[in-house]
Image (cartoon, rainbow, N blue to C red):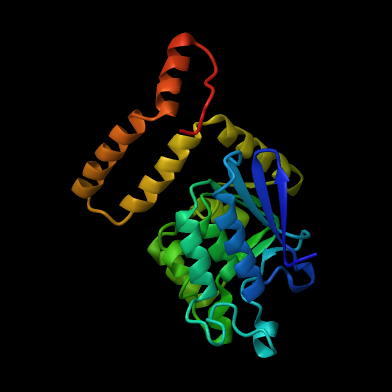
Length: 261
C-alpha cells in the first residue's frame, strides 16, 4: 500500500495519509500524492466531497517528517533537489483550485504541517481528544507556510501565542478559535463526517462550485470590490441549470434533481 490511500465512499473520495508508524508525517511523496488526488478528482462529476484523514487513531498528521529530513527524505516543506516547486505550496495551490468541499476528519493530533492541512480544508470535524499545535519553534523553526491559512481562521493574538510558544490547543479550544467546526466524541466522528457528506451531496454542485470559487476570490478584496464581484457571480449563478431547477423544485414543492450545470 502507498503513503496515501484513496477510496470512493458513495459521493465522497476519502484520502488517508497512510504512515501510522510515523504518525502520518508529511514527506514529498505524501504531498505529491495528495496534490495529484485533488487534481484528478476534478474530473469526476459524481463526486460531491473529499474527506482527508490519517491512518490509525494516534495522529491525523504530525507535520513534516523530521526523521526523514535528517536522513534521505529531506524537509517535506522544501523543494526537492533540482525542483523549484515547494511541495506544500503546490498542494495548497491545488486546494485553491479544488471546487469540491474538503472535509478534514481529524482522527488524532494535528501538528505543524498537519494543522496546515486542517486549516486548508473547508470543514474540519475532530475527535475530542485530539490536540492541535504549531510546535516548530521548539526545533528552531516557525510555521511560515501554514500561517497563510491559520491567520484567516485564528485571532491574531491566539495565533501569536500558538506560534511563539508551541503549546497545544485541545479540540474544544480549536473549535472555540475556529480551527475546527466541531469537536465530537471519537465514537461519533465517522457518523458526523458521513452526515456532513450526505448533506453536501444533497446540495447543488453548481452552487457549491461557484460559491467556493467566489469565496476564495473575495477574501482579500475591499468591501466595495467584494460587492461588485459577488453581484456578477450572483448573475452568473442565476443563469445556471441548477438555479432554474432549484426554483422550480421550490415552487413545485419537490426535491430538486441537480445536473451540476
